[in-house]
Image 1 (cartoon, helix red, strand yellow):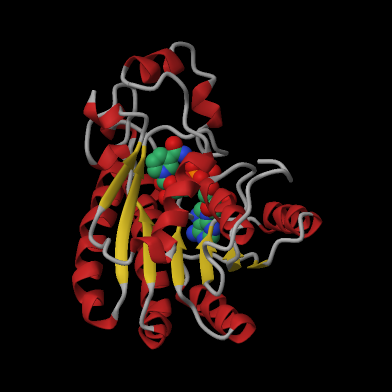
Image 2: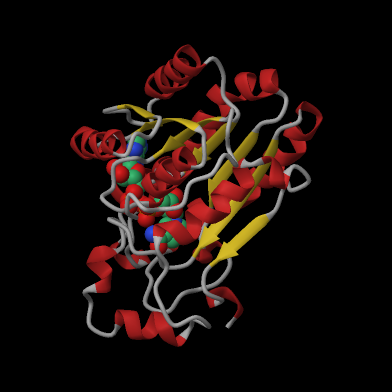
Amino acid sequence: MTAAAPRSDRLAGKVAVVTGLGSGSGIGRGCAFMFARHGARVMSCDIDAASAAEALALARQEGLAIDSVHPCDLTRPEDVERLIAHAVERYGGIDVLVNAAAWGAFAPIEAMDFERDWRRTLSGELDVVFLACKAAWPHLVRRGDGSIINFASANAHVTLQGSPALAHCAGKGGVLAMTRQLAAEGGPHGIRANTISPALVVTGATRPVLEIPGFVDNVMAKSMIKRLGQPEDIAWCATYLASDESTWVTAADFCIDGGATRC
Ligand SMILES: NC(=O)c1ccc[n+]([C@@H]2O[C@H](COP(=O)([O-])OP(=O)(O)OC[C@H]3O[C@@H](n4cnc5c(N)ncnc54)[C@H](O)[C@@H]3O)[C@@H](O)[C@H]2O)c1
């Protein structure tokens, strides 16, 4: 995105916690920057302190209201508490929580180690969402108009050819189901909870697999729109879900995927 990216006051008055600021062109960074361009004050974080600092410098050049806690390991309850406390202290409350940060191992079952791959993926994809929702929950209840935006995946819906995503399917299937439950529990408190399920988006996480010969061709063969997704494609959906334009939207899943899961 460039300095000429569109701006508005769609999210004016909102405080958003957006995890995963670091990754060079990741979805968390895309959401944080877009939210700030549309009037939100954003508290972000990343386990990777250097790339989070780089993102903050870019945000400052653009005059965007983004702050960050880094390094922050969202699999550690004490780090998550620190992030949420810092957001409340700095901005006075929380209206929106975007759980974009995640880590998952990709390997076929034969090569998948229980501790190194399976358990670490479930922690990196599920614990991070549970811990952030749990820590932010009382603050979202206090505001009475909270929005939680979680990331499932096309892998939670369909089997993708050439994607050894066993643990990731379990993690993201879990995020999809737990978000529906969060929506039910949040309804009486005015808290909405929805998922976005992207197909392949060009980010720090996916850039290496795009180099594998034939990989992009396979992806395109299963896509109605013949281009790869970009973080902004996802961030526009997150902006809608964070805004008051979506106050009747909860327990929904948005497949932002160029049609990939419907092919
Ligand atoms: N990119 C895709 O094609 C795609 C597709 C489907 C779903 N998703 C989901 O969208 C979300 C964003 O994906 P992305 O491609 O931007 O990822 P990414 O790896 O590019 O960025 C994720 C960021 O989160 C940080 N992070 C990871 N674990 C962390 C932890 N424990 N604590 C703090 N920070 C941590 C990383 O350092 C990184 O900066 C993820 O939940 C991912 O599973 C992505």
